[in-house]
Image 1 (cartoon, rainbow, N blue to C red):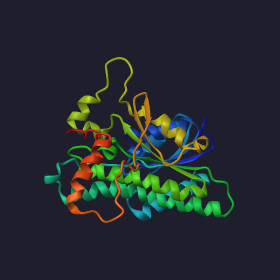
Image 2 (cartoon, rainbow, N blue to C red; image 1 turned 120 degrees about the vertical axis):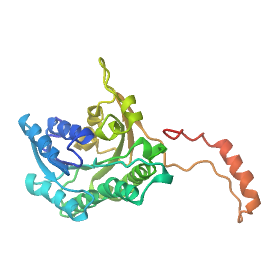
Image 3 (cartoon, rainbow, N blue to C red; image 1 turned 135 degrees about the vertical axis):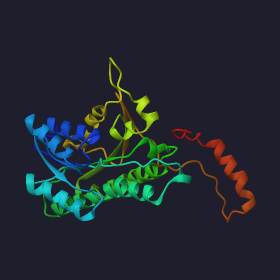
Image 4 (cartoon, helix red, strand yellow; image 1 turned 180 degrees about the vertical axis):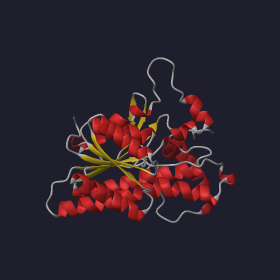
Length: 291
């Protein structure tokens, strides 16, 4: 079992992807703190213990800075340590930009992006203190981005912005926390969840088949998450992995592209031809989902 004797916190673990991650981590030997807002977290923790695993439920809003600190502390107090944080909690409020409300924007950015940043910050502080005290650290953070965050998605400007922010946060956190023995990666899953089932076009495309491999089952994502949370993944950090069914891929983005230079300030009239020339050398942009 690749997570034997490790302690993991999984946020948003009452259903969907988070539930599958918590079950899979426990099956590989981890003690799991199952976080969610409601009683579903207790059901998942009870399912784990009924199957011979170790888990506790902790109910609260991970976008609340103080609660996020308490969640990390609960893991340490309950199990004596923390080795992995799986940031999974998220919501969507899909609207076209011209009809999006301030509440639609604020809710998604708060839950999805701040709900990653707050637990990450407090887990990182715990591991920094452990490292400075001379304890060996093999800590792991696994964040949850999305194809919407990598490529954009029509009708999901708020969600795409939050998920792109998670990708950038992953890259920065990987660089900052490497000195303490912490790796930080992200997954961008394509899977059937209560969130996707609420969107008719996604619900139809991701419907479970009557027979054969269910490529959209959320459990297909969990083996990668479990491995990234294990001690054996220490050479991998700052990466974003897309997962769909039996397909794994590593995102190839966030790079400098072709350029043109002058040894002086550009004249506005020169810019248009220069940009058009650059675009002939740049790869075509990936299509935006739903466009």
